Length: 258
Image (cartoon, rainbow, N blue to C red; front, top):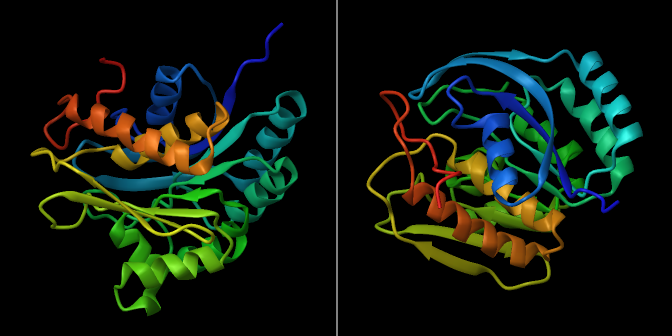
């Protein structure tokens, strides 16, 4: 029997279906990859903003991971929103044993502006998780929040995050004001690569989750980190171009429509 390619996803649940675990499942399915999913947080939100985050108990998450990983070995891991800083040591302990490609989308703030994590979470994420990360995918505002001493300079932010242990840092520019969307890919052993994409007229709910999941899918399928980053960006740009309106707020990436 041919083993099924699978990605372990640890993400929040979005009732709208634009972001979080549903975005992971849809993106991975579109790549022919199976999603193993653990919900890190329930949310009260719509297509405009997040009102409340309710974290999964770390002890429950620990039990879920232990039982799942005793039965299944994924090919890669995708980490999104965490509901509580107390989940970090549990997740890190399990992921360190796996030694697999890990894509981390450091979700810190909702697109509508609501803060989703505690003030000490960014520092804890950097210290505890980043040494395990293959590809980190912050948007520009998240990169600046992760490295508050950088003075807003994205190159300085990337250098600090790479020094924390990441293999690659992809800082996306969808939240910036440039005419084009400028994504910057940094590596410890490679020159910085600039990727420019046409800026679409709509605003989106779940773009970051979709990108991180697409990169994780490509890593699971055997791509190198740089190949996965390039393929993930292309696929996500297509999904954004096909975005659909579900509610009255931001559009959701069209992950199923070719």
